[in-house]
Image 1: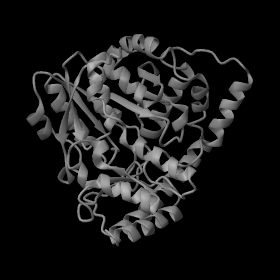
Image 2 (image 1 turned 30 degrees about the vertical axis):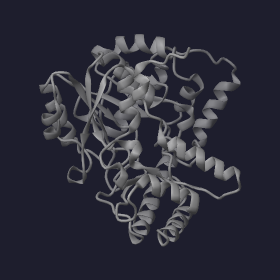
Image 3 (image 1 turned 90 degrees about the vertical axis):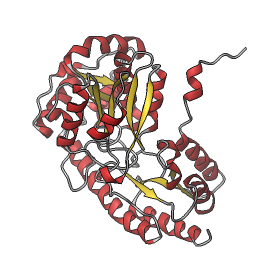
Length: 387
């Protein structure tokens, strides 16, 4: 007899993975598919990191590291905060994790009791609400829109906070909208959360991928927040599954206990690769790629506007466009299905990102080269002519 935990009834599939699955099926059948659906940079891992991993593996001693990560890597991340942001973070507060998702699991594991509520912007990254539910918490959506650049404000908190609220999760840059929170705004949110006895978790996974503005960190202003980061996006290490988290000192020991049981340790080869992430040669490669992403955004935005896509806000970070397609179709899910079947262009319908007008929105990732992006817009235009 199959018996599945009741919580699983609330865990939805990651719909973009269903789109990706269909894209692979069409590719296997000989179709040329342009992938604008998955949030994964198309660039390879920078060679200095690959070389560092290879040198380590050639030694043959691939063993566990401490549960909180290699001391050398934690110290390197600390130096990165100092060199890039002028912020001093003690290495002891830095937790190396199996991807940013591992960091979120650890944070929610030490913070969430059954029935605790977490406030999350809607639209927002879908896994957050499912991770909250997995720890027997209750995700509470904060509907946000273009009037606040799809970011929450203290007024949103005041309206939604209850005696069961544990805290707020925000992202800057955000997925799916690519919008940023100013440091003053993050500080105001933290003051509003702290005044109510809550905790603020800041997702900085796309930090570094900013256009026209300097990358910032909440840690330059605040110590009493949880900040989650990743080697996946800016550093181009998606498949290596490595991230980190900076936490208030009082939580380190409890997070360590959970990490020991959840993961034993992060991937050892990935950590040795990441030791080369902050070398000047690597950072030069990464900055060149950041400029390429900016050029892609600048090419795709006007091309999509010309064929009827609307954008309430322009992204300043990450590599996503969150397009209003309500003038073009009644359902973004139906439109996404037509685009992949008829145009060979894979996009993500708003359904993945919450319940705040998902039928009106598509997320489009500019994670392929500029020529393919222009071609994608041309293919989409041909389909739209027949709607």
